[in-house]
Image (cartoon, rainbow, N blue to C red; front, top):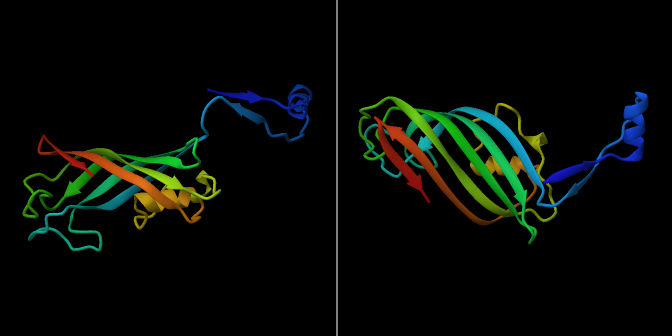
Length: 176
């Protein structure tokens, strides 16, 4: 749990109503955490099943476009790395079945999931300054992580993802 310790100048400014600006000092019993939210609409959703109804892309066959609210949380780890979770929740609009690449028997549904990265940032600190409330479609999950760190060079130590879709009422999990 974090506690805010007001400096003497800040306390004086609050009590006197003066315009003196003073930053609070922070004491922490736990790791540093940075949280940022962004939204993306029209995100290409890929599958490993190419077919007559999928569209080609550099990242694999596209079967749907997603409308996603992204919540990015970076937590500093004791050994100096950062755990960064890009959690996504929203909906998809399908034009192909991701299981076959053929025609979709459904048109839309909910999607939620997350990508978790362990990164080494070599001194770079995360900040929300590089991420706007509406992010461009060109930014994939790791691009958002890079933007969080001001596009400083990062090394991925580990990563994994899990997403859940409802396809015509049926669960369709994706894990990797």
